[in-house]
Length: 630
Image (cartoon, rainbow, N blue to C red; front, side, top):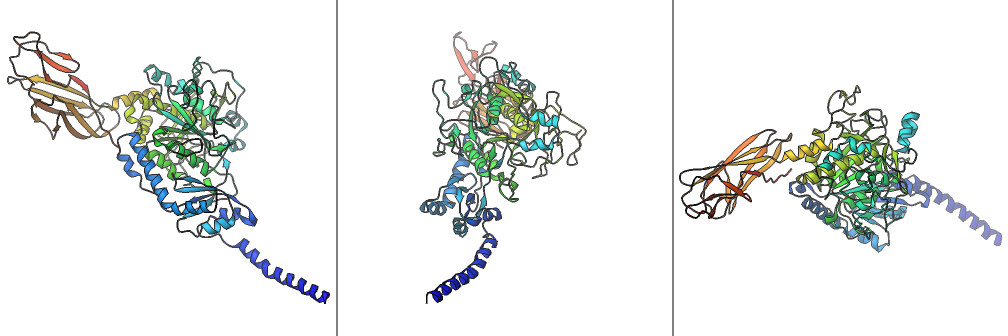
């Protein structure tokens, strides 16, 4: 009986194995659920788990932000709209994750959720939910293009790696001088009032060239909440750099140790930072989390976001370019960071991004964010204005449009090193913070440009020093400007600031007394800039009790304000508007030279020699007040 029973058990085991084996094989070979990427499905095979990004359905319309007047209004609108939309569309999904005790991070800027170590059972279950649009694998891959070294000649490759340690630069670093930053400093503009976010490998925040410029440092103590974020979780409490790349790029933004070592373009600006790479390895989730931090910084845990603490400009010396075997995953998806890049731009935050180090071939600007129209893409030159051999050329493989937008110093650039001291590095990574720094100088000199990214880029490109060569890329000859090697040319801080200061048209008021003591004012408005001005409004202030006799060309008076909507002003265009007013007091006027007291045009009255009456408020020459909207 025991033998029969044993044979039955063996028979049963064989039958079960024969029946079950095809099932296991079919599950392994089964296609992924419709909402799961093939890479995500493959990564969870045989009990494995992997980091995933869940995307919820839909995305809000952020375009109304473009019509808001200030950067603060734009940033607040974008933040409120994105968070409200994500809260609504992800409510059920977040509750599900919490009920199942699944760790996750909300990426409201992309309407996504990052989930670490997701297994296949969870992937299958979540992919059936109606509030899930897509689930993809989040793979870490190199964000700093050291891979380019293997494809370059030894001489060019040597220019990308670090050179020997240098104790200190020679006063003002050559790249800083090359972009004419010192000339702008001499005008009183050093980037004051502007916040630059370095999104990179982290920062050695206590470096003597960087600590005084850190927004979290008050000269005595440090506050890292809202000024530093590490989504990798390895250094949540204090800024650190496990690679050295971010310390170097931050130095080129603002570095100045106060003893004459000036490696930064905008030493009057403040910096904040987010580590979007772990030992040089980035991912879509890490890049997205840091863009989100730039829009609305939070505390050390990434909570309690506050858009009033947002960055003005982000410097992005990295590329989202993959490196894993999954062809459709993460950064191999061309539009992986398109939405978040555009969200920052709409919020009035400039995204300055490296073009990449995959030159000298054409169409090598191929990785996010530098390949997007929403990012200001930067190529690299050397001290002779020659294009660096490694600098990627356009056109963009994503849009087909001209790239890079502009170039800056990127070969043997001296800046701050991790651990202290200074040393040179090369790459479009080094060129990028030069441009972000110039943008900070421009916004400190012309605060009406702050938050207006389109206008800012127009000023920077129109004032760049044109550079050409013999290379044709994308059908555009290198002799043309712009071209796909240099873009519009070498950025020029001094020319950009001079142009921006000329952007505000001048209004001159000419006044004339007549026999009835009425006063006629003509306002001559001239646009002396290279840019067409849109939605220009001229305003003049008069005493509220004055009687306006006439106002030309549709001018309107509300209380003490007379205004004209002028529309667009072309370069060098002149428009004249006029009004006639009555004086506050009527009396016999004597022949006497008029005087201006604090902008008040006055005359003496007989018989009281010391009696002064106000005739009209506007001075002889006044600066036109503008309301500019893009």
